[in-house]
Length: 366
Image (tube, rainbow, N blue to C red; front, side):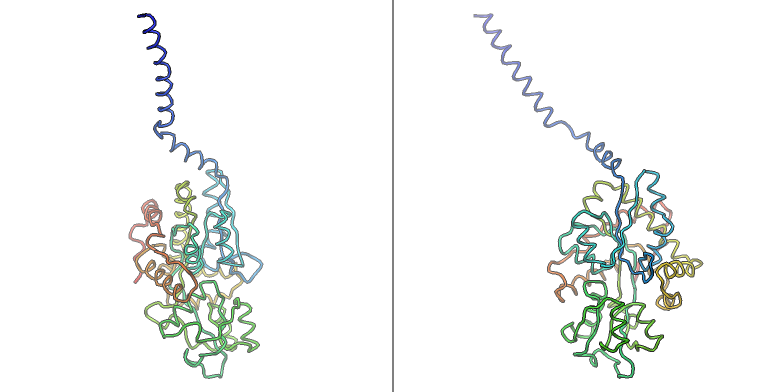
């Protein structure tokens, strides 16, 4: 009986050891998690970056010196070549809607976007993170048919105004007219891209158009008068902002890649902001985009590029963006609210400024 008892105890020990081994396997410490992230980073062979194509030539252009400087000088390609990672630039004439669809389908990793397109994407629950500011205080202009006496929004009530809907132009217009107590319903809004709007103005098929630098070109040709623009206001209502967003999933998995990208944007912003580089920066983007350099310079007249292309996600930038969200909600351009402070992540910009010794170089906008 004693022998049998010992044998029974031995038989029960074996299942117990197996059970303990299973527990250790299931609940083992996650020490391999960092190596998993490292492996994922090593497995990245390409990053995909989208840019709205604002070129009027056969070459691709963002229409801004900050992004074009990076693109034309292959700054990202040179940085990521050290890690055997390719950089794929995708330029979209369809701008915001097409880029948002590609982000939602995980066909892109990052995108340089105007404020409305970025807001619409986030409102539509595309999981992006706002990483860095790439433009602010960008003015828009109202071009009207000449010799009609149009000097105010009231005189244009019920008239045909062209806007490129679904883009930063629409949010800019809505923010601007809201300050004067108007909505889009007070006018006959016609959805036209800038080229089509310019042609319609020249043919006198519309009464006015809200846009950027091409409006100034029409003014020089005496095709339009420009009685109103956002630069006339002190509060910045209607001025356009832009930024770099990335897919949140990608950002969490590959923070080192994100930091390299953000640092490159910071370096470009620093170069563009140098007074001695101002003319070169304007020539770079206008030559590439096929835009008149004198008009581009005119659109930036009395503006410090250090301020316009400040990368800081500061109170002014985020506050103006939040106002844009509220305007978009009122105008029913979006259905869901967006908390801009929850959307942004300034850690990469702040870390990059430290790494590149740019501390105190940029000041918060007012």
